[in-house]
Length: 120
Image (cartoon, rainbow, N blue to C red; front, top):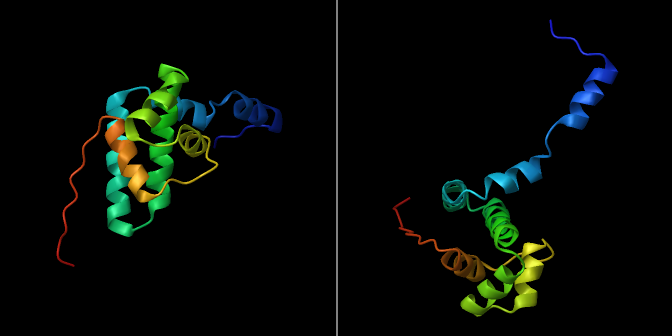
């Protein structure tokens, strides 16, 4: 049986990677970004819960901003005809984008999507 004393357990916890930092680092990989967005978009289309998709999309924008610098928010805002402060609030988690804005962000990040209706 695996047994850790409290000090060893606390040391392990203290040295564990921060999930958010690790996730944002993984999101530097554009293939990982695409897979993550595709997975959460499909989940949203299946269950109607948009929160996970929006959080994922926001994480991808944060990763792009981190990789490209602060000018990325201005570039995206200008390209998508979105107010820069509005986009900053979305990236900082202070505001949830409307669905229309979320799809604009997907296009601005260089992604295309194909949504099809199916009979229930």
